Length: 202
Image (cartoon, rainbow, N blue to C red):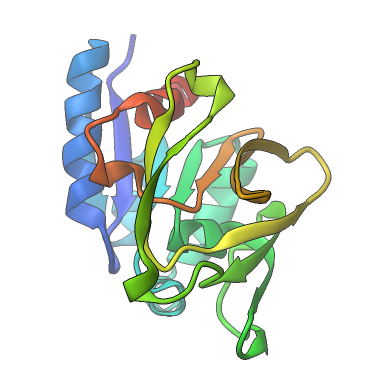
């Protein structure tokens, strides 16, 4: 089996946390591979799977576009490369995004996933919280989900499947090789969601 190269988009946000967790998860799963920060086009072209982390979605999208990364991410996604968007990454993968305060959002989007997303749906930084979440694809044990200025998925269509809900709101979904979570799995000791993503790349 070839070595698996996983990239974390290194523009802004929870980059190092994901790199650390993925490298740890690769060891746990016994997979020959490495996770590295991706900052330029050459690095992006080399990865077998990509994580777009939480952070500030407008900033991540704008800088990624300036660096010529957005078009390459779209190309890789359409070629079947697994992509995992958490929090801000979820927003960037969506086809439709709006904000409760400003309405329709004018920000660079990848527009890859058949989802409509509401930014900051649970409030601002001070409304951050952690909850045990039922995610059936990960088994019966609840997942400790950390929400920080989290978005929610208001609507899914096409081939998108809902993976988890909280208080009637969709907070995790998958559309073939695209996986999204409104929360921050890299901030917990539970590796199951990263394991689920890495299995998509094998």
